[in-house]
Image (cartoon, rainbow, N blue to C red; front, side, top):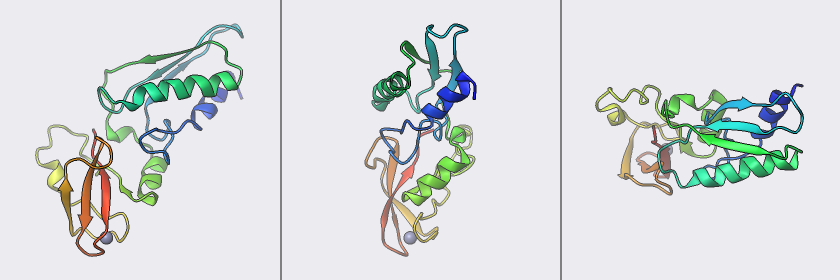
Length: 164
Ligand SMILES: [Zn+2]
């Protein structure tokens, strides 16, 4: 395993503060890993936040640094890049499956296309019973990235991951 692979493996253990079941690599927010040629040089991690002003991003930066420092990387820089903007299309397939298993409806495919008017009018399937007889109760769920839905078949409320 080379150093970049080692660092990537460590980053795969850093969880997303908003959705602790997902790691930052599941979310697709890790864009690049730069390692120096010499062993003591700084490591740079480039991340793109899931949405601008996300309050979790500072926590992610702290968590990345502490995970890498524990693994012996003494100098770690975390650089935030806002362009191109993160979209839900960057969530990995493993990440989507974890979201659903956690009871959060993963983003509908295609909603990352911001030109698709009324994309969110498509039914969001219930993560529990897969029914599409669901309705949005509130634009805002437990965090700003989620909307609160209710399933009209199993009557369970659930979060829909809406940020894109
Ligand atoms: Zn249901």
